Image (cartoon, rainbow, N blue to C red):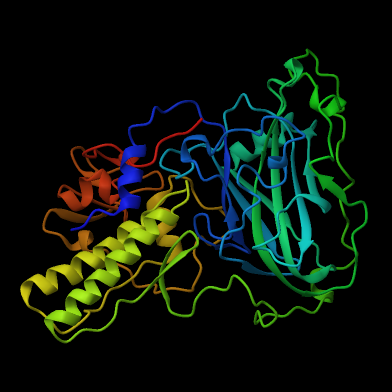
Length: 436
């Protein structure tokens, strides 16, 4: 087994001091279909500070977060009028449940911006319009962030059904007001890259520039949530919410993605981790071609770890199993291959990597990969058929593997292989830690 540069960096990260987390927009669902951890999502490069709030409201990071001016390689197709569910996590990789600290009370909003390229646009400046907002709900006596906590970190929004199709940046934001009375409103924005499959013609007005749509001394930025009683109503900020003029059924949509030319998922992608895709290793029929295929596999593994976002690398660990199988075949003199390998679906990878439940009213999978996945560890003599994860723990003394099965061998218990410490014991330190 080889140890890639990227994997070494992730293991080194495990020694970092874990401190109190805030939150990060980590992934999203489209009409219930899980798009994958970090797929089509811009996010910070540094896992140690991925959940940090934006320091000031005039920062360029207000647009799409830290490092949000740089696009990712994937763009997710979305139909006009679709329901988007954003998932926020206090631990980026979802290894520990939670979305944001209960003290971080405040409003939520969602913005969109039409762009020529969802990958290359820098996100800054004019063109942003608001499609959703939720401040303080006097009836429920709850802020939007409190509702989000109750909903396992999920915020669902219906996209406008009457606007033009094309490339958009989709920007959820949360604002924590627990320090606002001390001059420290804490924003948590993020951006998804989407291609809207629609043929509407409405043009939203009341567009704003980000940064620039809010000032540090605005009443909404200095609101004191600790006043008893609070001085409600909470002051509105930003533009008014765009109201769609047509129902979804009245708008024709392109369902084949024929208009999208950038950020498409490669047709030969067999496994993904975030915005990285694996291609099946080359066929081999002799010793030389076997070792060449082995090198190809480990080169892809290295690229996967290097591309891994703060939300995790569980697709990379699965790909390592593929590489180990090829390497073992070469060592054993089995030069006809590669053998078949059942790859996990996006939903199975998400269930393995996150302790947060998928939206209860939505499917957590996307049917773009094999649905017959069973990891090798589920059949090991040191394992069982008991499933774990998503709130289900293994029996005492057993480990919960990255694939969601209980067992006692290294395949289950090694932190390097994605052992889930929240649902059983693990050997070694977890690769991804809670970040400030």
